[in-house]
Image 1 (cartoon, protein in one colour):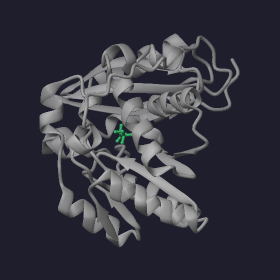
Image 2: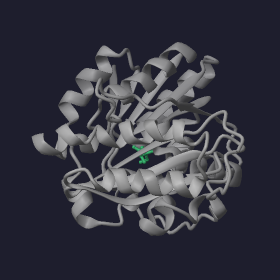
Image 3: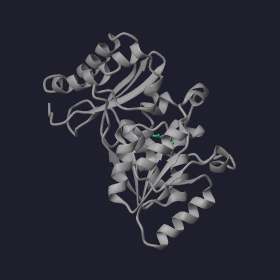
Image 4: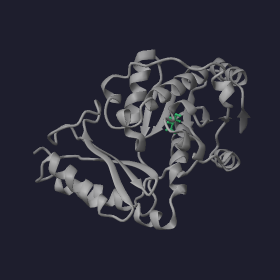
Length: 282
Ligand code: PAF
């Protein structure tokens, strides 16, 4: 595996691959890699000739300085995992390399960004659009891989791709969970042992709510999930919205296979997850 730290070097390597007509799979990450990331890498490996993984904690998507400062950084372990997964190129640039000047672009992300994480984390999605568009320009991937844990982020990235007219296949990949159901996340390492023990309740309660959808309204199910999770020690729901899978707008009925998207504070660790409500028509 080649570790590349400069944009010029990356562009040269990409030009070489493109010249040889090789397809390129990009997996953008912020490091602190876990099996969820590796499942994206495995899929990219199966579907492309060259696999590039970027490892970059992007400052422009953090609207909270403490969150940026405490975001886990584990470069050595990340490189070992990427090497073992058969990655061709790990792109690990510095902040100065990616942003030689401040990125002042403001993306018109529209309705997919005006709910849930949009208002909760002002500027976050614009920062995601900035970095992902830069990575797309630098890497010119055939396909780019994103985990469905960040369900709304994928919708935002699809919108950015439309605005920028990138010819890139956005591949969304299923959430990877621990055996007890907790969605894998780089932030899980910040949970105390007691918090880690209760955190699987998030997925368990959301999964139980899918059966309730057969004979309850959207509002009833929503409230049931919020109340049950808030009853768990150390848990505080920030929001739970049941939304249309493409527009991200809250729905009032079960048609169109809506998705329940949640953010929960477990102590001071902010966890997100989602669940699909399938096959209910009432
Ligand atoms: O999902 C993430 O890890 C980040 O938001 C991404 C897509 C790598 C952009 O920094």
